[in-house]
Picture (spheres, rainbow, N blue to C red):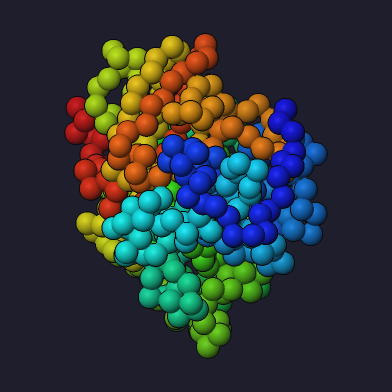
Length: 427
C-alpha cells in the first residue's frame, strides 16, 4: 500500500520546464479524488475502505477519480483545488493547470494552445453503487449564459474494474420515440409529488464491460452502476430531470443549479434545453453505442492498441448527435509480458494504468491494489504533445498483461473512427 504524499504544494512559482525535461516530456500525477454529496460510492476505485468519506460525510462519498484534469469540480463547499490534478516532480508539487499555463505549447501542442489556451478536456472513473438521476449536460450556448462551458462526454467500461456490476448495471438514454414535450413538462410539474415518472418515458440499455457509449450534450442519460471511464469536455455542468432515484429525493436546486436565474422556474425553457431530435431518436443505439476497434492488428507482435472512445460531435459542446468535430477520443493499450513497444500518437494524453506493471520511458507504471486517500501512486502520467508525437516506449516488466487507458484532446486524432464503425470491422 502506498505511503501518503509528503510533498507539500509548491508555494513559489514551479519550475515546470525542469519537470518536463526531467521526465522526458512526461509528468507524474498524483490521484485526484472527487466526492459527490448526492451519490453513493460503488467502492471499486481501489480506495481503502476507511477513506471513501475522507472529506467528511457532509461532503458525500468519493465516487470519482479524475485524470489529467485542469477542470474544477462543480461541487458545493468544495476545496479551492478540487478536481485539479497535481504534478509531483523533483520535490515540487503543483497543479497540471499551472504546468499548462506555464508551458502550454510544449505540453498540449501549439495548435491546441493557440485555440483554447488550456487543456480543454479531462477524464474520470465514475463509480456509483446504483443508478443516478436522468440528467443532461448543457451545450456551449446554454453553459455560456452562466459563464461555463458545455459538456459532451463518452463512456467506456473497463473490464479490470468491473468484476461486479453493483445494483443496476443499466443506463437509461434519451426518451422513447413518440414522447412529446408536453409529456416531459408534466414530469417537471409533478416534481414535488415523489417520483415524477420520467423513466417511464425512457428506455434502459444493459451495460457490458468492454463496450461504451457516445453522449452529446443535451441528451438525457441516467448512468448505471458499472464503473465508467469518461473522457469529456472540461466542464462540470449538468441538469437533473428526475425528482427521485432509488427512493432518494433530488432537490429542485440541484436540477437548476446551472440554469440562469430567470429560467429556474420556467418549465418550457427547461424542456427546451434538450436536443429533442437526439433524445427521441428511434435508432439511438445505432448512433451512440461503441465497441473497441483495433488501431491495427498487432497481437502477433505482443501488443494491441484499440480505440475505445471515438465519434464526432457537431461542434464544441453542442447537442447535435451528428457532426464532424474530433473533440476527444481514447485508446486502450494492452502489452504482453516481456514486450517493449514504441507508440506514436497525434497529441498529448492523460494515461491511467488499469492492469499490470511496467514502464513508459523512464517512468514506472503499476496498477495498485489499494490506495490510501492522499497517497501517491505510480499508475498515472500526463504525456506531453512533444513526447507523444515523437513516440514513447512502453515495456511490460510483469507476468500479466499491462493495460493502460489514454485519452486525447480535440483534433488530436482526426483518423479516429465514427460511431457505428465497429459494425463494419466486426463483419
